[in-house]
Length: 353
Image 1 (tube, rainbow, N blue to C red):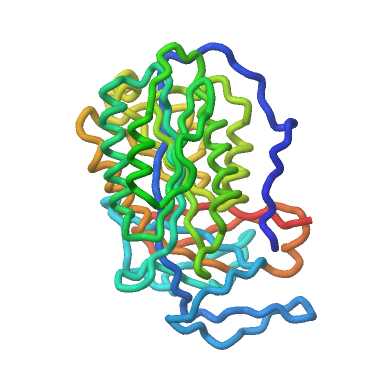
Image 2: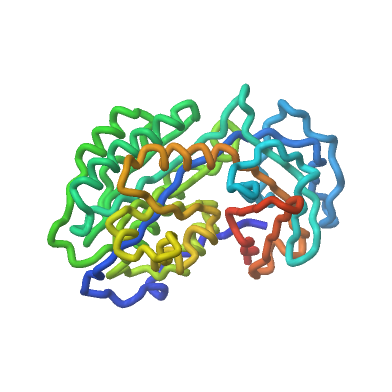
């Protein structure tokens, strides 16, 4: 099975919208962990299309990124919403189209070993609805976020969006270059649109072209961190298309809603109403997280998100030969023991034709 990228075709474009909405919404995240093959058996493809079990993988083995292997990033939390880090391969069950499959590889961050490489694109709303105070706190928070992940083989890029999508900094591992890009952020006070989905789409394209799936024989974590306080308005690309492209590229999208929006729509239940980004399922269906910032320092929130992504697991399996090239979508569902909550990075995969 090869996970095929969805072409960037004009048939998926939406009509342009010319008015700026009065409210706002957002998105954010960051990245995850290291690859250590588990003792589950690797299946080797045979001429008859069946799989035979190979020798069990050793702890220090490097994962072979097979084109027929389907990886899924998974985050597990307890009843209090805290990350759970001590699960083993046997704690998970993986189902493809309702049928249980063997987990061929199980990977988790090793505190004392090699860390999983990370590629993150910051997509930042600079439309007029962003306050100057929010822009200042945002710079500090993003610096804190990137510094939290500094121990990883990490690379970051920065783009802005409002009426247009612009790249401020291509991928770099130099944190000083990153901070200089943050210092160049400028608001668009007269902006009439907020091209959020277009920005995420461009970020996915950037990751696909510039951040390889593997680095040093390890699977790279690819993510888009979108920070905005405005409704997506004027986008050319449809939300569903962006979700499909993110899944095909193995990209997770995270959102952070800033105070200027949540203050306007706060409910009596203390939980802000969902934004259009939330309703679209962009974060949920790509394995990301959607959070709401407060009036205070954004730093702790961004550091917490960085901590969350480094406590994820990676599971991978080999689909049956008959499913790999049938051109159909196949669902993936992963379960964990009762009392725990699981979030997976993709709902399934598309068989190549």
